[in-house]
Amino acid sequence: MKKSLLFAGLCLGAINLASAQIFSENFNGVPLTGGTGVLPAGWAQYNVDGLTPASATSYMGTSAWVVRAQSGNNVATSTSWYNPAGVSNDWMVTPAITIPNTGNPYLRFKEMAFEAAYADGYRVFISTTGNTVADFTNPPVLTVAAANATGLTTKLVNLSGNMGQTIYIAFQNNSNDKNLLFIDDVEVVDLPAYDARLNSINLPRYGVVNTNTSMILNVSNDGSQAITSLTIDWNDGAAHSATISGLNIAPGASANVTHTTPVNYSTVEEKTINVNITQVNANTDAVPANNTGTSRFNSTSSAPDKGVLIEEGTGTWCGWCPRGAIAMEYMYDTYGSQGFIGIAVHNQDPMTVSAYDNAANFGGYPSCNVDRTILDASVSQGLFEQYFAARKDLPVPASITIAPTISGQDITIPVSAQFVTKFAAANFRLAVVVVEDDVTGTSSGYNQTNYYAGNANGPMGGYESKPDPVPAADMVYDHVGRALLGGYNGQTGSVPAAISDGQTASYTFNYTVPATSDMAQIKLVALLIDQADGSVVNAKEVKAQGGVAVEEKDENAFSFNIYPNPSTDFLNVSLENNSNVNTLTVVDMNGKVVYTREISGSENLLSVPVSQLSKGNYLISVSGAAASYTKVFVKN
Image 1 (cartoon, one colour):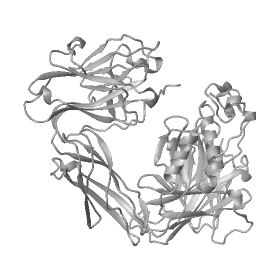
Image 2 (tube, helix red, strand yellow):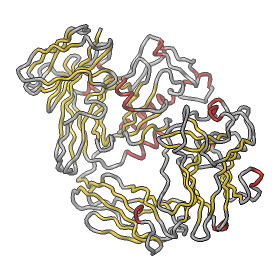
Image 3 (cartoon, rainbow, N blue to C red):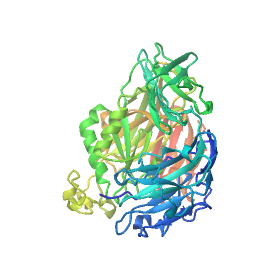
Image 4 (cartoon, rainbow, N blue to C red):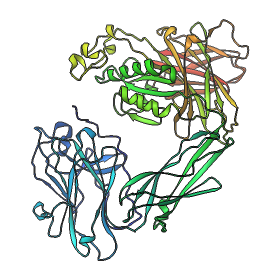
């Protein structure tokens, strides 16, 4: 097994300030050098094992614990990954803390193991005599065999037995050849008896009329008494209050609670739903400020089919990326007729579209974005199935149609979204991703690095029988993202803000397929993107040649030609039937707009200065209110 080397993607929460604090430390005030810092003043650490950290955790040096930066927060970090392997015996001790004689004192902190397969455990001790290892003679007050690897998890220790005392609290990593342990937000607090905290509202964004949609609330117990019942109101203009009994949420724990009144509308509605926990165990909640949340919900008149988009980050340099290629083929073979859509977003190889690669923002390879909602997720055949199953039946606000037509190397791509709900002020956009199958190349950049060669990491769809690297002559790449029409976030103005049930929003994209691509292998993926969160709410994929080849153009359509191409100083743009054209834009392959200008209806020939541009490929687009045309030119 290979331990994960990444130190990224943690969701680090802030300290809960609702309870009366006796002591607190979130490590965010620690200055860092090279991403690593020492424990705050007054804290002690003891490297009892004296072992040498593995190269991946060499930043530990000889320290038992360090502070590391992640996602704008700091965490105290310890390792049990040594070379040679061994058992950790690393201690971190708080300053002296005086516990009051009154109240409900608790130790509260957050813990997390970096990797589930190598989850570090730990013990917590209390001393009333000093802060050295020898002072912690009493049994541990908390023992955790393996910390939670899915996210920072709150732990509580009752300190009522230490009231009136001055104590030291020690965290000991006692793991045998694991990975990393994180401790954060260490507090001693006076907990109220009843304090429920609403963490999140799990309510699908859309639901079909006359259909029950469950509302699931994630609730934490920040009080000292176990939660056995909650009274919760959700309000959309009318109150829907219910008491949910039979709960058992221990202090410091969290649980999902389903409201007994589902969301259900008999007509198409657009609603803002406010949720409030009004009572805990039939008592008033001591901290009402953390009891509320808001969610949006639209009922739909019907249930359009949903396409599930998985954009996979890959690269020919990535030895683990054959796993993604095999998973993608399996999904198309198994679920291609059921709405699965896959796009390979290449990184640092000849098939890279930098604007796509940069916007997708993958943290490692292979990884994937699912409907741009589940971000930077892991890649495997089984995981792809899970992602698809979780999203394929979600209600959506609109269906999508895409009907391309071809004239030579030019593709006209009308895209429509047929809405089945209403919005007073929506912010959707349409976009098209051009995709190509059966891509090959002869340069070394098309060689595929293969960590599965020789069955070194188990079977992988035949890659275990191929060499490392697989020569370019033996590689064929499918589902390759080639161009973004409308940009990564979609075409501005392609969907109106006010939308009624049954309304259709349409936009026509145009694209010239480069001579180096094969029209027979081109696919087009239409996207409906919600700008509120960047999510792809629906997607549709078609073959370009599934449309109709045409020779005559729509009399209302506009077109343009560019010459010379390649160009050195000026690029000439010849416009035809341009009364509906208003903007010309040049974009580099990183997605940066390097030139733009407005176009009047009387202009038929434009000269675009390109001498100032760096050598390379660029996209030039002319667009209007209902359509856009895009071509590629080369700057010499």
